[in-house]
Image (tube, rainbow, N blue to C red; front, side, top):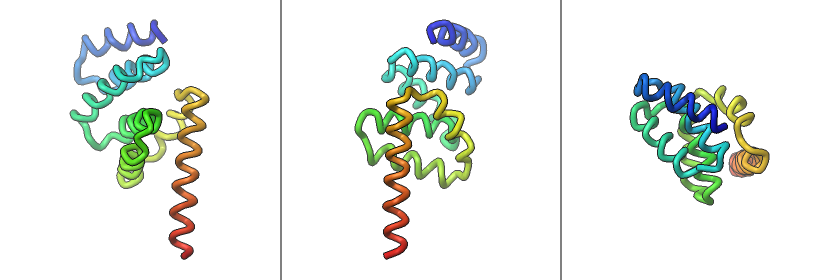
Length: 120
């Protein structure tokens, strides 16, 4: 992760508008346990493109990790409204096991709640 972070940082320096490098940089920071820095970098990337599902999904995980369930839910709802949920599966490979389980459990719980409410 440190090598990936250094490479991604260099790519961001070469082209500040390169969103993929920013995301890669944020992923490396997350893997190194520097969650707050990853969060700030993702917020910056989101400010440039507020409709990007890969950024929103990563921010949702970080919010859930911090215990901000409402904020995490809102970000996940936005990903669903945008209609680009294809980013979720590849992102799950990046998440640490504990965070992957957190996201899966949270999404399953929310889905079950929605289904129960629709049945009633």
